[in-house]
Length: 301
Length: 301
Image (cartoon, rainbow over all chains, first blue to last red; front, side):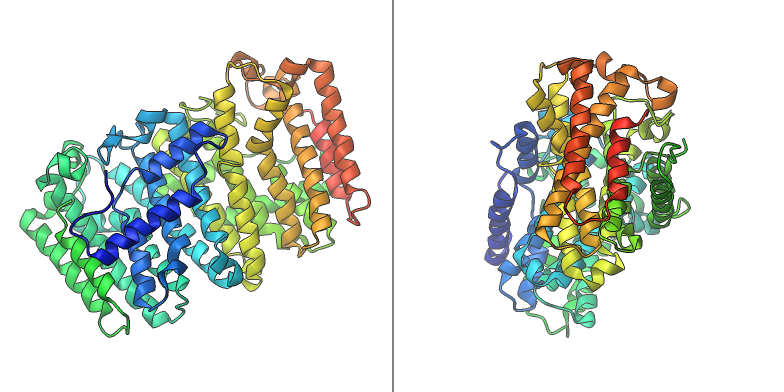
């Protein structure tokens, strides 16, 4: 699958291409031992994907008028974490998905043991990438802060905790508040970390600006999730890269299931307003972040 | 199982008790949501264990005549990484072990999905603990360096890579060099990181001292592994906490299988000499590190 989506603006497409090159460079070569593990790691990360988190990190760095290469390590680390989480979420003991981005999932291709280890090694790699970033090493207080934020976003209070809540919720009746709490951890924490890491990488330490960016990111993260749920009902399998109706078939709670389709669309639209409002008056060069908010709500896959 | 071994010196036993308190404090409370995940994480970490890596970190800090609380975060982070690796190694797709430390393994107790997630969340927690350490925050260059070393030790060039090599080696004929390369990654990398992290936490940045400690740790790590292999043949199930002969039954390559028992014992003994020699002339207060080298070779479980 080509990670470059036609509906993205040229600047956002450039960011997606940029992180692809960074990822290719920081991932261990497939020819280095242990080859099976390295091949699986590269497959998990380089096999396409929307590269939303890197685009958010680059968008924040651009928003602060920084040269965007300052966010390269953060962008790559965020995407590596995201890729590891997908590998583990797809495992038979978890969501048991055989297809991802139109390709066999990592455990289908390489076996469960290597998929578990590839995820584990990718998590470690994300921290290694962030902590050996030249900018972080020359400004170590910044490096410590960024890596600590990433660690919090991945852990039991963030992404891993959200997946645990999600698994426990299968077949349960959740209300909207409970669904939002689950997504706030499962996907929201890392999306918020993406924007904040991009800003810190760009040298931002103004708490007002960071808070505005965080409000923006929370709304964009929720919009992405609601839109995903809507596309699971509406989208075509060939376009979304997985089976349409997969969430419904698995009795996963979704926004359309809880609110109905019309109210889900309205809630998604409301997140666009919240995200754009958060950017207003923050003094940012916010064109790319605005484009990403529109993309979250309007995308067709 | 009581983590405090009677054959340890009082100082080493104090270190094992000390890290137990730190771990209890840094692990999320079992009552915090998501409770299932937090309960599994606590079970995986607090269910006993030899606490070798913390003892090595504290031993190195003591060796540098530092007050040992400087190594608390490093000691806890190292043990959390070790615990996560055991949870994942025990999974059905990996070594498929039902018992660990005389108790049901994490996936037997909590299910595979929570065991995978507990491991994932523990890895993130280890970095969070290390990166929010007050000493690292006030001396961020030290924090960045320690976390980068930990990330390298856990990744595909270290622990996770070693497990991949180990899995690929089941049923294969390895020679001694290949077995040593596997263990150097699977367990050696984290043991070396333990000693180096303890030293850096204590403020050491002398490369000669760090290299001496690294040589010491590589030998101690290998001694531990050879002794484990010997105990798998020789030990009693009730004492070693797992089935005697488990490695043999699984056709895992071991030192006694490759070298014979007498040569395996000799090789283990040789590591003691290498470890003690590395400490000589390094200007360290090396009593605890010496005791740990003796323990590695002489322990009965």
